Length: 215
Image (cartoon, rainbow, N blue to C red):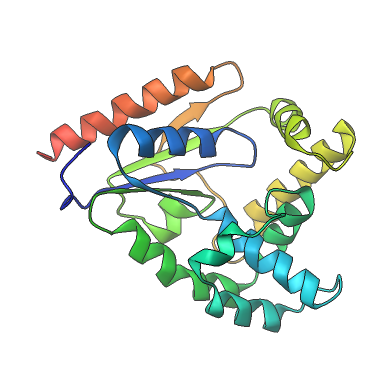
């Protein structure tokens, strides 16, 4: 664990079920950094907007909910479901929602003591000057199998795979902060790489940057 006065940001991006959350949490635990799953911000806004609209997502209300979002909202039930993931991808394409959540994420990233944030535009938009950038990915079928094993909604593997591919397409093609791999991000492909091995590589990379910065 580093000193509490350290300002050091680790930005972890990548598609769903690639392992970025597991790797991010492991990094935060190893180095004593704060951790934020930025996807929960969008899931919380998306689920609430759908619930309030009785299944219809109103972009203007979603933006208002994003402006009102508090950390406690990230603890509500149902944010890890497929429905929440689909809702998150939809609200993430709304520029007003992204703008409302931008400051929240930027403040978290530069807090004292270090921070790890995972999402889809952390290294490219939220924290382009992050000290460390990682891009975690895996083959579509591998990611779908992982997500299918997590879900409790009775979705078929084929439906989970289709949902993941649809979400990837939305995230990569949206006008507002599309998901891209930053040119200076370390690529971690977990298709054939175990999570333990990926975590070890990530820790080594962070240590290199910490040492280079004289931390």
